[in-house]
Length: 366
Image (cartoon, rainbow, N blue to C red; front, side, top):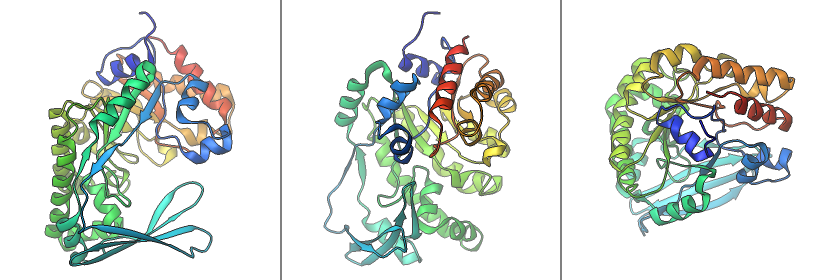
């Protein structure tokens, strides 16, 4: 087979076809890594430097302006962390949230929904979002054959993530949300139903956007966090319609589960997504056996991930990293439909080991 462009190679795998060789990429590139190890290189420069199959992430969205949803922020003393309090003013009351940051990432120390009345303000006043199709298409045209263009379902604007359950966990807090499924399941369903409706409007607006892949899901829906029973009751029924809507808009979907997947693997594949990620191995806190996963669902979805970045991007020899790439290829690469990638993002990595990862993937030919 002649050598494919990175875009054609990745698309072949997403379509569960056999490309020329193993596609190899990575998930979100963290600014911390790019600054510390690559002198502030851009993501495009990262992919070009190592010869990996590139991904361009872009999320241009248009929010409906509203005088009934006004956000302000205030810097606070955060005991060593950058700390910001957000206040959302609506005609019937205010919401507050506090976010902290360090050089690695951001997190919430105060969630916006503290009681039911807070959620009622969100359900009444949160402005809708739609995709800026023209902006996506300009970026896709400029990116060309270098790789694929990825987007995501929107999350709550201050701090959210794509899946309905995952977004609810950001709004309420993971532990409180899980307890509420037992103490007040009807209210949890109300929250999830609103998030589904809000995200559906965005998914429908994706028609004509030159995305190659739209992300949905989130790690709080993994079996590392919740049971398969909760997944069946509170995750799949609210995320599956988003996949259907994205398909109706002409988009492919990848469902992101960073954590335990094996007990719900067939349920995940049954939701209809085109691809699943991240196939996190046990030594990274997941539970995935790539070979078993391939045999169970490899004919139904493209598999993305599977590589242990914590142990093979740091502190080992290049030959060890190469051997792990080869193991992943032999476990999940048969027949195509597999994209090798770290199982989610990373902060620390040795450039020489990333190069070994890329070089060995190029040697894994079909």
